[in-house]
Length: 171
Image 1 (cartoon, rainbow, N blue to C red):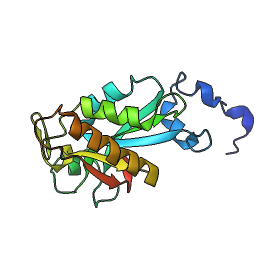
Image 2: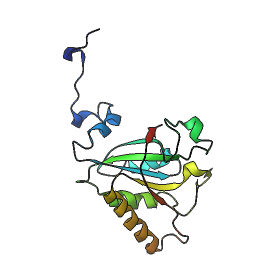
Image 3: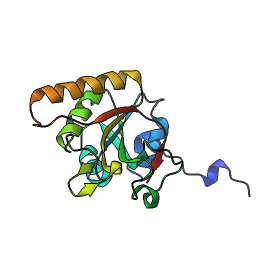
Image 4: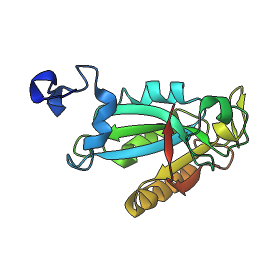
């Protein structure tokens, strides 16, 4: 079969989300000077719902990261033996929202003081973690974590880990 341009539908990047192709926006991140934050704080559906509402967030996707198994799926991760965390990737425009602001919101919407647990969800897959994409993100994450610790909002120590992102497997 021959596929030519007349058989394809061209969608401008600015219209992708509106036309149902938002998940493909991640491909255009570098070209458009967008950034990606990857955060784990319990069940990814609840985290995603809150993070995607932030002004400047272009798109979100849920998945698994931080483990050893390639192409991790829910069936494997739910057992708590792969080392993966349920995580949300947040595609954002740094001209509209700063990485620091996303991290501050992250610390508000989950309990960063419970190890391997969020509410009734228990296991390493529900741990609190920031998976950085660059050294700049690492430095910002460390500074924000320290700021939140010093704020006194949480009575217990913050256990959120800050780890370099490895692979991310979409759920």
